[in-house]
Image 1 (cartoon, one colour):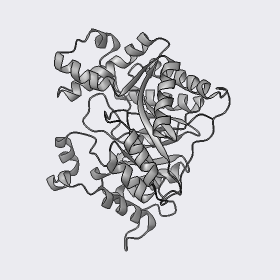
Image 2: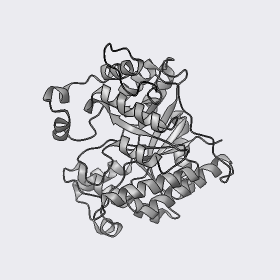
Image 3: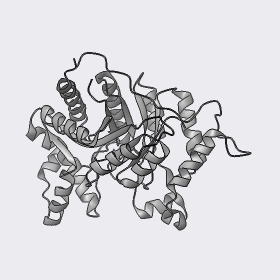
Image 4: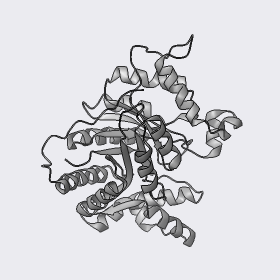
Length: 346
């Protein structure tokens, strides 16, 4: 059997598009992914970013779960420093009660935004500077275990969904290994090679929340029938990321505007860095590159982030990759996929 494939959805919002339509496109993607046999769809918490409508993963999870039947849905992730751990315990216990066995709780330590917006979210400059993610994680687990006298995270008859730790460095990999959590590495935007953190996680893992390591690799991939068509799909996101990293953020342009956009020399240097994090091409070529990276990092699952603003192109990209992925492993693509694995709870 091939490694499970999953999806990271930022709910892309193209230039001129209504947010209601972007959300509807994400519902259609999740239903499409369920039919194709993808294991899970996660939604990331981002703030004040043009072109990203995924500000509240818990709302996307609840909404999409009502329009799907089996696929796991989760936060990829909740930026825990932006929130009181009690509030996260309440929200995700309620989601688990609403959709038992279908929810994942991925946790990150970054703000998911710029410093000014992080200040607006947290309301205290000392909270912006403080890096106490391990303590916050311990507090969240304490709320789930009922270990805080006098206050109960409601509803109290369900546990938190399975927790994953997310990261793009050794820090989260080491913390996940030490406390026995599944770990997801964000290679879809990190320019650093994933090999070190992924391998360190597995080698240093100690049983805790789960009895054995489970590592997920997130990669950015854009797939079409031809290499040129795939480059065309990737171009709007490339332009948007370059503008973001050079301090002039915009929504992803239309494909036509993206084709016409000309990078300055500075932007071209940034574009080269972004391209290095993307896998773009035909189905077989992309599947082979993703499989090689997954093997090299000893991943147990691969999560695909395709920030494609053309809704039809995005659905087609995921369908082509799923077919090539199954063929690469010799599995009949029409055969039912294995259910997405859950994990031991905290």
